[in-house]
Length: 510
Ligand SMILES: Cc1ncc(COP(=O)(O)O)c(C=O)c1O
Image (cartoon, rainbow, N blue to C red; front, side, top):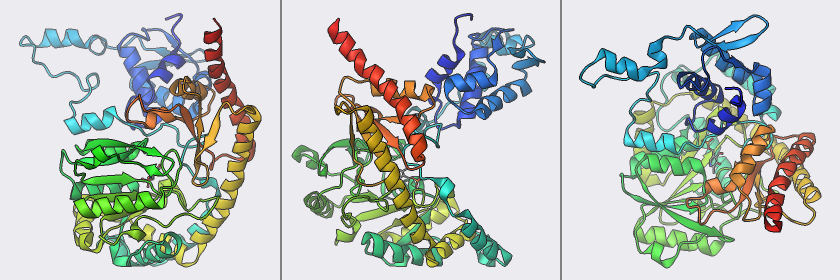
């Protein structure tokens, strides 16, 4: 115990516990460490402030875990001297195996649910094993998060208060018909103008975000075993939903023109093609016109569904974006997904699908049957926010702000690495850039070491399907980070990267 470093142990195991919030994960990990006697009876835990600092996480997170463990009797506190593993823990908890043997003689006892994880289905196991959601959703350099502190909540509050003064009775019951008509109209108008989507309001299905949109598509259009082309690398969320739905994934490499299927890929008929053509996630390239045409031709010929994830193209800093794929589709094979997570704030949980006219009735029924939709007052607020042009104004303002932050980060990268040891790519649009590292760099170790310093990022290699294809790098979100913070946070990150760059040099020199 004397040499046991709790912070190190917890950092190693954090984020292996599925999509649980960080404070719950911490609670579970410490509890398990007590049950496994890694933390023996009477041992003293570090002060919450100290543990939080060592792990680079919020003190509240640690305090939550400690308080929960105290409430459950795993820990006790002694005034002025800290938290200790309780000496009152029953043998039943500490020796689950013994309990099993002594109570039952047939060896068929049911293990305590507090010790043994519940038996999940095959699908559940796949989902939990692949879990990708990060514990930290704010701060330098969490990818994909907008600056929610800049959201005009006074305006939002005004609209919402007005709506709540005398809400429509229908908006307080279940939602029907694919969402609030006023919002479907506002979204259709917006998409026609801003993204060249060809649609009528009737084709818009309001969801609570891209994850629900994907889930709805899969539940209505897929059967287990169906094959899906998916970009390599790709968004972890799409990959995990597909796997959990029992689809077979066929990773397709991307090059400078986007997804690049080979002839042998085309020999097997695909049910789905998942793409991010406007801003490949996470590498950032725009799919070329010829690739778009050939994907559409393929889908029309074989009857595949193209699921287009247009998640952040409102924020484009260079050049004009190509129109979306959906706008070029004359065979009704494209389902277009959009989200308000980037343009408004992720906690809003509002997104939308644009489905071909022939699929609209089934999708509306699917929403009603699967999710028993609601939130019409929220949708009404969003519709008003758009109708009164606050949405456009907010996007314009954020585009300027994010543009300056992007420039700052690019400058810091050049300043710390003037010889081009690392390269920023994919930064013409969106809320993140990709920092490419030399192939020998272990990006997952760098990300872990940076997290200890309070800097969040995602290892680029973790987005790839196979380790052979994986590139080393870091995906860095800059939109939610002030310019000052970019300077200080990147200095810390640069120091960690340097250490790893020089590891190779030292190793070669020996
Ligand atoms: C590629 C991609 N698509 C979609 C989303 C947004 O998902 P949602 O609308 O569920 O918040 C994200 C979020 O990070 C993303 O990276």
